[in-house]
Image (cartoon, rainbow, N blue to C red; front, side, top):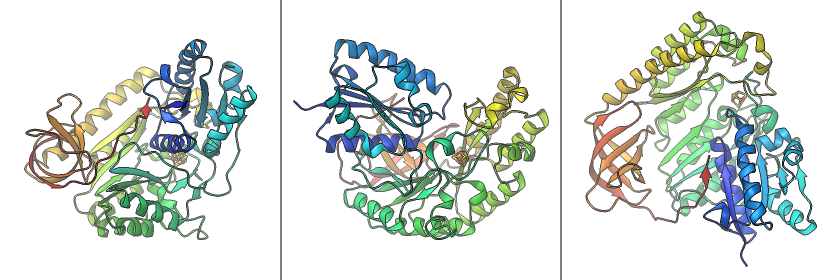
Length: 458
Ligand code: SF4
């Protein structure tokens, strides 16, 4: 009988894409997706240790799965991803019902490990400490037919004090240039119109391939020239490594979208130094100004941490000032929470009281929403190119899509919602801090539609 799997994904886009690769791998091994864990022969948890309470979420989910396994003893439970890499044998020590644990460097071995566990009847664990080269390409089961993530780099050579990524994902390794372009060509041939290039620090892509000369700008241009690719996005660039040639490629390559996600983290030079971010607020704003001057109609988003250990009122005022000057289109604002194993987690004596952080967070939200709203209001009356995602979650007769600036737009349609991946011209008629409203002017293309794959993101 055909075995069925469910993958539960925790965390970032890198993990979501790893889950697509895991799904591809399991399907190449003869399995098919199940609708529910009750119906599954394998439940694989792809974990993350960047988000808060990652351990609680993992062990809470495992607790539930153990009760499902008690009713269905043939079911396998596997844990992969960052938390598995970090906690290693702790997972099976705490939950002996787990059949397989694998880390971030051996995703490609998941199916083999599960077969080994089934054949021997014993739990297996395999964690590799480092990778020497970009892992060979795996079959990928894409979540959406018209848009795809493409990994261009793994690991990170920086050492931000709050971040666990370098210790769980290892050093930066760039994927060979031709392999990236080849994957994008294959995707375009199968109907993908939009790709997002993924890496922890995409601006330094290629440094390890060329004796320190980054190749990211060339990669953007090459991917943008692939026939059939109409939108190229990327995440995340590091502000210290944003180079003029990348800005030029964004300005000149027609397919590269006018959206830059440039993580600020703090507007205080003192805090930025304590975080080891490698830039000052002035340098950040200078690079942002250069990008805005070169790239017409650029949308800018960011990440900001509130309450990093030792952050004073004065430090926070600087963050408010920089956020106001940067006039973001939106920002992911985070309350600092310690990640065990990071430098900042040791700064216990400098933790900022929760009520102070909460008040600062509210003030920052007001500043960010003010600029987001103003920037959205300025778009009213414009006709935007939108890629349709599907029906709106709240109103099935309203279509939802994204502009080149990655803004969500809701617009009513007469009759059926256009197929996901269709291009539409939409006139913006209204705005809020987090989305736009519009009216359909016309559909401009209708690429092939394929089936959606069930991958749950927790
Ligand atoms: S650049 Fe800093 S925040 Fe980003 S992954 Fe590397 S260490 Fe973490």
